[in-house]
Length: 85
Image (cartoon, rainbow, N blue to C red; front, side):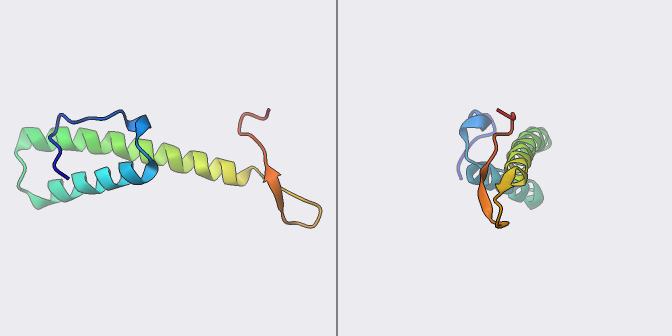
C-alpha cells in the first residue's frame, strides 16, 4: 500500500475487509519504528478511526445475526430489520 498519511478516503465507503487491511497496514507501519513522530501520531489517529469503523460494522453484523427469526422447526426462517420495522 503506497498511501500517504493525507490519503483519507471516506471510511464509510470502504468495505470491512478494506478497512481492516488499512488498519493492519497502519499497525505494521507503526510497529516498524521507521515513522517520524508527527507521522506516527497521524497514523495512530487514522488507525483509531479505522478501528472504530471496523468495530461498528462488526457490532451491526452481530446485531443482525442476533435478529434472525427461528421458524417452528428451530431453523432460521428469515431476519428482522434492526429498526423493528
